[in-house]
Image (tube, rainbow, N blue to C red; front, side):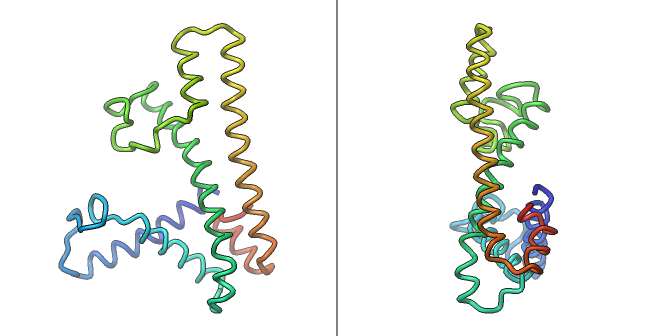
Length: 179
């Protein structure tokens, strides 16, 4: 799953770099009105990712793609939610606890490092040397939240899988869009 998202991001990043090197009058790192740092536009990147999936899955009929696109988007959103949980765990491991990378905002990773309310409650329980029962309760809430995100991802993937041909399903599996 993570490999599929990374592949999609790399494919879209290649397009961005190729356009940037095309001499469109803008240099890498120069912002543009309506774009984020370095000219990055998340909505435009999302469109490129969706277009890559459309091409890879072989959708040439706009009506068919319009029916499938929301299902692909739902899977991508669910994958992002699951990845954010994993990303926060990895960052916490590397930074040595809350607020690493230069402070409580998570440094260059900003919002990705922001914990959920359940994760914040667990961190408070850990920091305050809470009782065994309080720790168990806080851990269970985090586990339930993570389980819900995984289940939402599985449901979105299954919903998408049902509308794909066998060939498209194989491509989606290979790209990490479905399991």
